Image 1 (cartoon, rainbow, N blue to C red):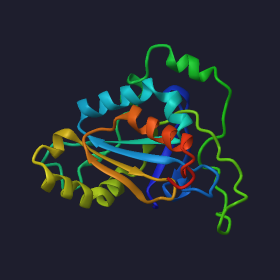
Image 2: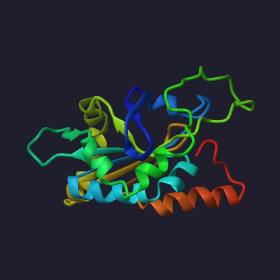
Image 3: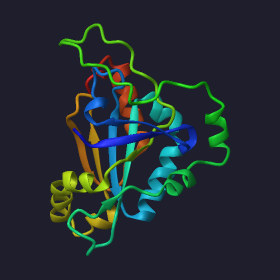
Length: 205
């Protein structure tokens, strides 16, 4: 929960404020469904391009993507690093940076409130994001924290390193999904929409 991310500006541009994963749980004014994506360069580029193409829908679904670049074998047991900013910006569709930069400014992540007492019935609305991707900070710490997940994935499939790993954290901070491969962004968005339409819990999930 102490792992940190830095929000990116509209279109994957200038850096904003930082937040811990704990800050992104419900009740802190900036609840997000955090999607961790650890994958090799090519797979991560494709996944980020798909996320950028669906940026508006991901923001509306309170989804925040945290990409991690997995390195080739032999680089250490927890060989993850933050992707270069150029990879994130290169995933943005042509014209998207200008369009999002011209949009009204929204409150950044990192303006942390003290968590109110349960049951949080009087929660203030969560601050909106400006871009659905955040940059992981201190990648070595991320690597150590995700090492058990990476090892379990490797045992599950010999191609896990090539396919990548996706972990979805619900707004209450608990793991909702673990799967090999990169995310199906449209499926994640549709799932949130279906829960809302059915009157199911979207505050904690």
